[in-house]
Image (cartoon, rainbow, N blue to C red):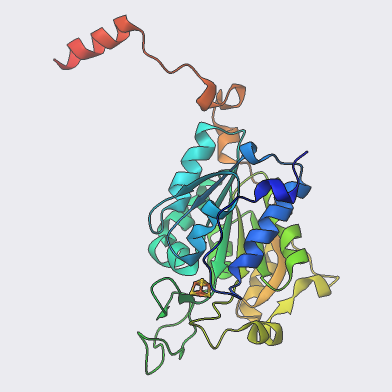
Length: 288
Ligand code: SF4
């Protein structure tokens, strides 16, 4: 059986020392190993940004795609081989700026993949511009007088779009993050884990200490019911999205692939898709 070590490779991450993305990588590796997954059973599809490098740092199948487009690729991979555990990943700019429309439709479509977003409220790779999740008033290179746009709250957007599984973690709480990733992978449908993953180089406001002071951990609310969508929505509104834990889970939603007639019988990747010569010739003739 694979261990955490089997999910490591020889590539040394070039994230800045202290970057929250290290914890996300370690949590993902721990979750996969503890679930009994093997590296060849997993594919990690990432977008562009510091966090997008994660697909090269974990020993699984990996694909480092283009900006904001990890979700369409990940959904295609899953539909082509439903036996793979497919993880899409990226940052807040990648997922909620450039790729926001893909996110909304992935939620609506409900293909069985897990989306892990490393949310640091800034564009780190391009050296510190404000992102869609930067707070109003936030000062960055592009907003020297303070951000005059309101922040997008990913958990509110996800719930409004009808997501079936929603969790939020913090890089500093690895045990909770490992548990959330495991639950998300086990969930049959689209799942989002938004992770507060501090950028220690360019975001001097939303630091580890800032999150510790401002985030409400739902694990400390024994009466919180993640099956209640209204409660989940009220909670993310009341906390301005600053809550961690399992926020919402709907076990009644049916995954996209489970609604395709005949799909369950065989993964597309194992099907013989070759055309018979006669059929090919007929098609050629038709378009000649
Ligand atoms: Fe992490 Fe920020 Fe450094 Fe990028 S710039 S690796 S997000 S700390």
